[in-house]
Image (cartoon, rainbow, N blue to C red; front, side, top):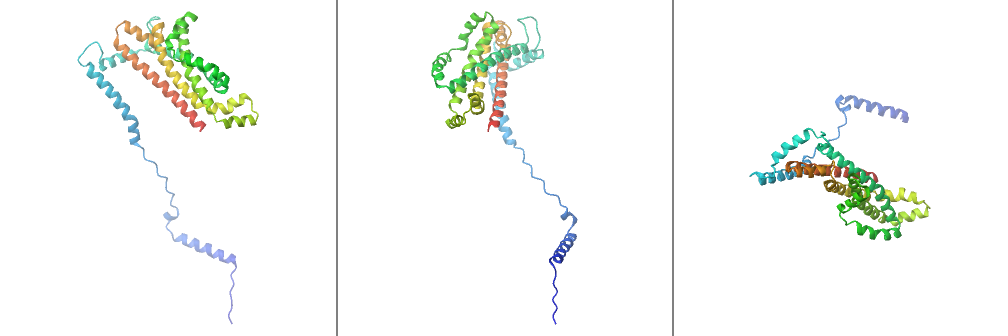
Length: 301
């Protein structure tokens, strides 16, 4: 007689768990508790760093080398070494004040930046809204475009006598010159950005019956922002160029007046120092606005 033994599923599961526990017990402890491997770190890209840093260094060294070769035989033009030594003296006390016409180079830079900030800020307050209106309304664009085409090519210094006539003072006349030369890039770039907004966006706004304020703030402004920032970059570069020439003519305190005053004293070394300072400040302004533009572009995308 054959007897059959039946095992319940519960007993089978107990046996399987016991078998797995025995198998784990026979494994080494290191294998059971082995930590998970750490993610591999990316190696630092030294080649990209050298490609970014080395070319500017070579360019500056080449400029200084040519300058040294041209001045090594003497003459009225100072050598790089003499200019560097004088720059150390100039920047050792940049904020001295010995009267209204004898200020340190630090004060001259700050006064010039102040004029640029005021004139540029006024141009932004007027130019950016005007660009939105010109790009938004065809009638206004057709009315204002000939005036912009007529006035934009005029040299900024041609507006300086008008400022002196109206304001009767040199400082507001210089600010007026900055204003009038900074406003055109912001108007044009903002208007072009508005005109290039896809018509589908505006059609949706009409369907939703959005107000003009919501159309500008929620549809036009995000789309036009890259164009507007490009106009701002062009304007601030133009403003920094013009303020030097304007201060040469108006006098007072400023980096442009400092250059002209040093020329009257036949101090060519200080003129070269001022040229480098003007270039470095303009480069920093450009870098600052490029950084801001990248932040806004990234936020938009």
